[in-house]
Image 1 (tube, helix red, strand yellow):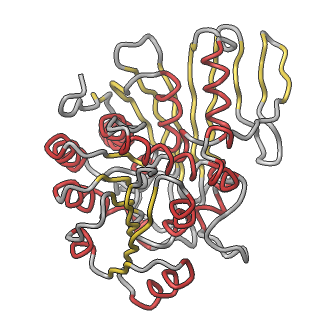
Image 2 (tube, rainbow, N blue to C red):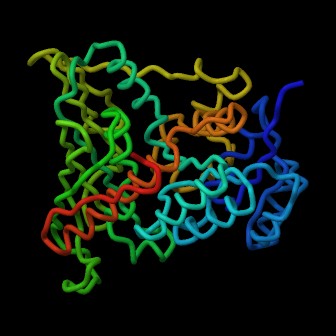
Image 3 (spheres, rainbow, N blue to C red):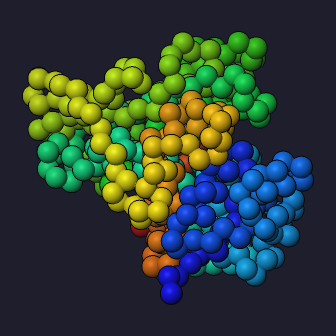
Length: 368
């Protein structure tokens, strides 16, 4: 009999994108969903035939039939809900970022170490077809030695929930930070960040004034450095979550426009390269989810899915990795330590921009 992980999803905006993936996965059983508003909760649960329904997150954690919780709630709740789930003996998958403070990152790491349960930050950027293609080029030796990395996440947040108005750009930097550190196989060690421009309607003297933040990171036990740029408001640019990788033999540069293909440089000669899909890495039952939205067949998708171009087909890869890590009793990728480092890189970058100095990025728990 196929071993199954009994999963509950908390937060059914973007989170509902994952319902059919878990339902179709041969190693998962979706047993419950959780949302504060009973009407929308029942509407979604009825639509997908989910029996377990909770409006209270803590009550859901008391359910012995739940092995793992996938958290897709507002950012400010991530740390507390992750810690509560780990303390309740549940495996945790949590959408980005892990937390909004270094102290909360440390709490999540401590809870994971104490519980021994899996924790995975569900970072879409390290499971997109673009990332998997660049990783394939790197692993094959085609890029040679990595010499430098650059990432950017530029997004207009008008129309999003109000709590985004109090967000510093670098506090939501993992989409730009993660693919660089994952390709480098290293942790961020220190950061020097500058802020640029002003967001309309904000106090120019406040810590939230920056329209753009741009940072240079040094990497732990590495000769590499990387550059990351992040914006949230008042910058004219098509949505982009991009990364560039400069190697000794070849380099990979993200396209300027979404409708284009990335450029592979060999020496000074460049040519566009179509990125393949990597559904072949997945169980057959969930392969089709790399190329289609899963929440609303009528096109009424969550804004993160629409702006992000479907997150590069990453959703089934994320769910599959989380489930296999639980079943195989191993660390997922990213594990709690990588997740904390990727999140803390942005938190420290914002602090660096405010203070005008280079800052070290903490090392958590047993991450040595």
